[in-house]
Figure 1 (tube, helix red, strand yellow):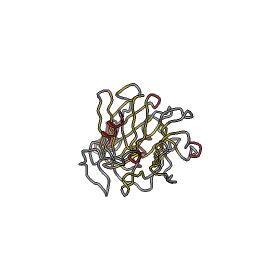
Figure 2 (tube, helix red, strand yellow; figure 1 turned 45 degrees about the vertical axis):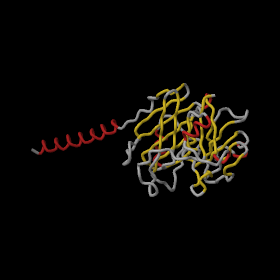
Figure 3 (spheres, helix red, strand yellow; figure 1 turned 135 degrees about the vertical axis):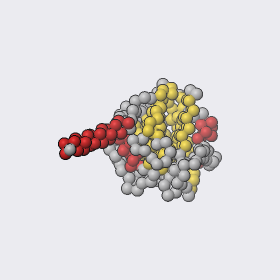
Figure 4 (tube, helix red, strand yellow; figure 1 turned 90 degrees about the horizontal axis):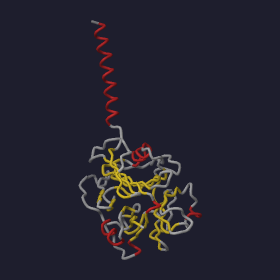
Length: 281
């Protein structure tokens, strides 16, 4: 009887370990099955490595080859000082992709929280010292591609500020070498972030289900693309990503923010004062 008991115990633990192994296999994520929306733009949706208690726990990833498309930053203060949702921004400027140009100041809803400049017009001329990431859009012979994400601890601002036409500052998530820049203060929220791979391709990563910024940093590090220069663009119901390419119309709308907007009910794009747009050359 003692032998049978020991055998049963061993079998139980073996099955338990096997069960854990199967569970790990079931949550294995395949980040290789891209859908080509048009040459140079790919899209994939996958479950996040950790399930959220809210929503579908999906990560939606858009990958863009910057050499093939034109990028623009638009600020309402450059025009009529009227915020628009991403559909109206797209219609006004014939854009195929529109998304947040970093966070804006809720007390001054037309003004970016970080440095934002379009051409010779500044929306916010204050370069925030703790926000060490910058999206830069080309309008110069000195730059190699249309858009870049600058790590301001690796790229000297004084030497870069004249090489690009427009800038939008944000908070770092990955540095120029792909190292995590973990945040001290985090919130669970819907989120849109951007990053680059070593070849310079731009990745936009959206989640509606709430995760913390540090969780998203780990998600990016686990992806097989060797991402670097990660930048936080927006969180909560303001988070917007519109893709309208070759009869593919994809709408990604944020909602949840812990302690501020704890609901998964938002169904509409919010008006945005500042956006980044992509269109065919």
